[in-house]
Every structure is written in structure tokens, then in C-alpha cells.
Image 1 (spheres, rainbow, N blue to C red):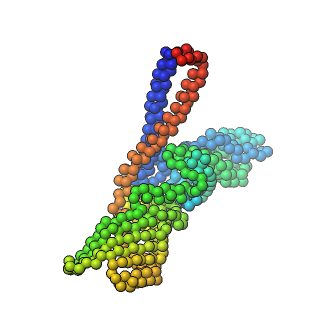
Image 2 (cartoon, rainbow, N blue to C red; image 1 turned 120 degrees about the vertical axis):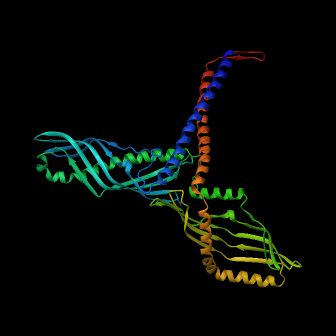
Image 3 (cartoon, rainbow, N blue to C red; image 1 turned 135 degrees about the vertical axis):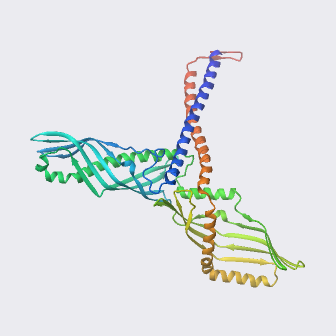
Length: 465
């Protein structure tokens, strides 16, 4: 019995230790992710020409070592470069990023560097002599283009399934120190070594960067508590989740506040106004996110199924006469395509770059004005459908202006400050849960193995260990 009590105390102690450890680990993960977001915002806040990325986001290996390279090997001469490293990788500028979210998310990024340098030593061996000296390879106007495709893993996380990269340079200059008179003997070979050096160094640099990039992307993806099914694309899954959110928040159907307007002796009162179908939105075309010149561009194209609405109204004259009635309508569909621009300096508001809208057939039913109901329905059902494109074009400018006024009042920086703590709590909960589950399984497995070592017999009266 004493052994049993001791084992129980050990279990409790181990569980407390596991909880404390996992909580500390989870907090460390949360702090790292939150610091990354804040570092990016600060990096672009007061910097018109940002270079590289903050260390909190990703510490680029600079300098990056590369293995020994054999540049030339003939019967008469052998040239090798060793103890070499690439300098300047952390000084990159992000020229553009384009993301297509329609199918599996794809990202195309273009980076530029003013220069890269390969520094190290070279050995030149010939029939006449052998020398070892320093060398430098300088590459100017370097451009790096990378293609990343994301897919859904068996566990439901987004992972980098394919990464392709290419690098081009405008000019290469090689400096082999103290090469002496051998340069005269092998002048033709030396003149072609710039291209040879670049072609030899290029695969090592790209492979190293691809491996590190894949690890960082997959690691960041696993830390987010969100999984996706394999049957639909992540974007369509997110839209389906958004539809459920709209319905759960009570926006479908959406009820408008009562409205009243008076002009002299006449008055209009509208009550019980609602519209349904807002939660039926879906993706119409492509949805893209791109960045160029430190401006993020978001293109969204969505549509809805049939919208239905209803309202009760009352017309009054001089307070003596009143005519109540009801009006209901249906709109076949509504499609909206917008493009928003947001500078990476989040103190500045977003800009509605373009706005386009199309609507389907409109049907109206009216009751309350007697014979005028038929005339009103005929005019509303006929004219808007004949002139709806002209009507939409007329509404575009005031709607665009109104949307921009709303965007001007949105404080993006404040919203991010409020949302980051929520993001921290989500990651903290996810990390702590995963680590506690893992440690608990190991603990239970260990206790099970220990309990098998004890032989015991049990009767209705007592148990002997």
C-alpha cells in the first residue's frame, strides 16, 4: 500500500512539473510569434526603404558557409576554392510578392540585393608550383525569384509542398590575390571563371535557403491552431467558416433600425426592415494578395445567392390620414469585386483602389396603396431590370466615396494591437494543450511499465503486493 501511495505522489509531482514546463514552453512560443508581428510592423513603420528582415522574424545566416569548390581541373592546372562563405544575404530588399489563394496557395516573391560577396581562399596547383591565397567573388545587382506552393498535409496543416528558386546577377568580378605570372599563362581560363564560379556557388546557396525556408514555414504553420480538410481548398474552407460565423452572429437575416422622415405635413415611417441571404456569399473569381513598393494589395471577388427583404411602412399627412402597407423584394444575386491597398506603415488608412458591383433581376411586391400597388410594382420590376447597369454605374461613385470614408476612420494599428493578445492566447492554448497531451501520454506509458513489475494477488478481503 505504501508503494501505491508513493507511486500516486510521484504521478502528481510529475504532472505538475510537466504542466509548468509546457506552460513555460508555450509562453516562449507565444512571445516569439507576437514579437515577430510587432517587429515587422516596426520595421516598416518609419522606414521608407526597409532592408532585410528583423532578427525576431527570421535571422538569415549571414555569412553563409559553402563547401569546397573545384573550379578547374586539367592536366596542367587545378583551381579550388575553400573556407568560403557568402556575405550580404541579410541585405535583401523585397521587391514584390504575389499570392494566388484560389487553389492551393501559391506565392511568388522577388528579392533584390545590391551585391553579394564570396570570401575565402583558393589553391592553384600546376606543374610549376602550388600557391594558396585569399580570393573574393563580388556579384552586383542580384535578383532572387522564389516560388512556393502550399498544400494541406494529412494532419490538416498547411505545409510548403514545393519550393523553387532562381538567382541571377548582372555583373561578377573575381579577385584572386597574388596569382602572379600564372594569370598570364592561363588568362583565358581566368576570364571564364566568373561564370563558372557563379554556376558552382549558386546550387549551394539555393539549396541552403530552400531547406531553411521550408523548415520555418512548416514550423510556423504547425503553431497555428487551424486545420483544413483535403477535399476543398483552404480559401473555400475559410469562406465556409466565415459563412457560419455570419449566421452565428445573427447577421442573416439582418434587421435594420426603424426609420422615420418628415417634411412639412407629410411623414414616412418604416419598421420591421430586414434582409436575408447575406450568409450565402461565395467566391466568384480569384482572390489575390500581393505586395509591391511596400504596399499590400488585396483583391476580393465574392457574390451572394438570392437576397430577400421586407419592411412595413406608413405614410401620414397632417397627422389625420395614414396609409400603412408592406413591401417585399428579391434580388437574384449580388456580386462585388474590390481591390484594397494598404501601406505597410499601418498608421495610414487603407485605400479602396477599385470597386465594381453587379446585381441580378429585381422583383418587388407591394401592398397598401390600393390600385397604385400594380403601377408601383410594374415600374419597379420593369425599369430597374432594364436600367440596372446604368443604376449600378450611377451608384458606384457615391458607394466608393462612402466606403473610403469608413476606411479612413478605421485605425489599423489599434486593431492590430488589440488582436495580437487574442492571437497570443490562441497560440498559448494550442501549444500548452499539445505539449501536455504528449507528456501525459509518455507519463502514463512509463507508469504502466512500472506497474507491470509488481506481482500482486487480490481477494475480497485484502490485496497483497
